[in-house]
Amino acid sequence: MAQVIIYTDGASSNNQDAEKRVGGWAAILVLVDDEGSPEATREMSGSLIGATNNQAELEAVRQALLALRKPGQRVTIVTDSAYVIGMLSKGWKAKENQALIAEIKALLAQHHVTFEQVRGHDGHAMNERADRLAVRATKQRLTD
Image 1 (cartoon, rainbow, N blue to C red):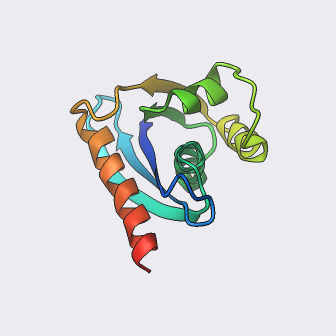
Image 2: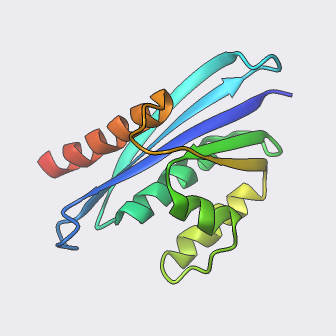
């Protein structure tokens, strides 16, 4: 059975001023065959007005899961966000973003999902690419 590996990242700017804050998110979906070779890649990104970095990180996961067309897929989500992994797979209690987390958990339940945490800004090629896409989406929104 093929697997989908999803690399996600989020970014946020103007964190001191909630009214001017913009969050950028990005996801890279890689369809991998049974031998582990990539068959197809899709990059997605966007931005949210008022979003914190954690909200942008979660939105990347949400958008990637929404893009999956068939339920029951084997999915690995690769992120540098301890918050995402804690909230979605380690049972951390949400004080904020409860509705978003609940929606993502419902999407996760449709698939066979594992999480992998990587160190951010540490040379992981796909994590670095997702970071660049998220930052670019943030900057684009700021200049619009």
